[in-house]
Image 1 (cartoon, rainbow, N blue to C red):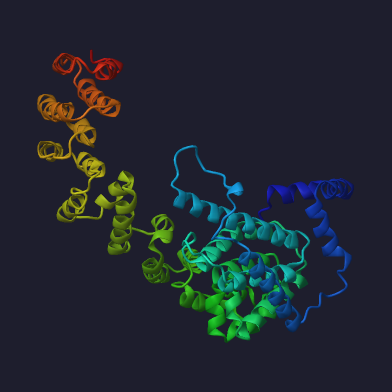
Image 2: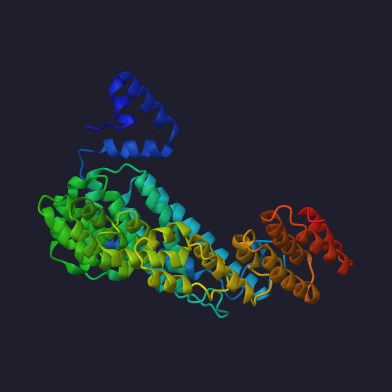
Length: 473
């Protein structure tokens, strides 16, 4: 069996060495010390919190957090707290919005610290009660926002809650809990939800945190199996947790894949877990699930799928994933992969779809990749957008068509300089001419054109400076 570096080292150390290291670690970490005490001090006493007590604690937290949120003054914000993000001018209405957001974020930082403290002291039941109470408060808190600084305040609260939850998950992942405490918290959460208290749950957050805790004791899946086995709604609200329980329960067995398939279009993490399993065990099922999940989560699944799909196995699916990924990221390496499974007509149609974009660079890159230099020349001849992106068009054809490139670029440069001025323009002009000059060594025409520009626009010292910087004069 493969052992990690840590496991191998532990096997080599004596008990005395291990205990010495543990003692030092406990001395240097308050959080670890609290976890150690909680884990071992009362290990003979099972934690006891009734469903009614848990729900009462949720209500207490909901009232507390609602009261805190209600105190946020969006009508007359405290300008003494204002910390502008920069020294430039900020309109008053925008400053008011930023101040309001800052006040809410500061308040949620306090909430986050309180909840992290509960995790660090291993009070997982009270943590989930607080978490649930905060969700209720975010949804129900009545806050006056007469100037619409937050938009919908409750929606803003929920989004801010979602942001702080990411750090809470990380804290759970690095905390050691007693398995019986994780079991109790899971039972209480499922019990509260099945009683119809759905308002207190944020599906993504609660599901992710429950899963992070349960991963530490997968053996508890058998205890929790009955709670999710027959309840479709519970499985949809807690998809990753439900699949984990089914997968790790002796009662669920291979049925976890059936459940995962049902949920794979509702939750991307479930889809990823199932697809990884099928990729290793069942190719037809992998493609069947992949197509359905991709429709729901194309952005999240594209990289995962591109690393695993076989372009020769299902050509049309590969075309779909590659085309959409290339359209979003304009990756020439993926274009090279796509070329292998498209015929000439399909390839030409795909390229043409990029030809009308304002930023034409990727279209030119594809033409260059395919050796269609005459087409690039045609694009240059018809170019109507001034000097913008002209360097991207000229660069691949400068060595092959130096005279025509200078004619095309020269005409556009003169037009730009006659109608505009500024350091940015001059820099672009010099860079463009440098491309032509650099690709046609020994061609004096470019430097002559640059010298003529200096004479014609002799009052523009910045233009001369930029041309000199590119060694054109």
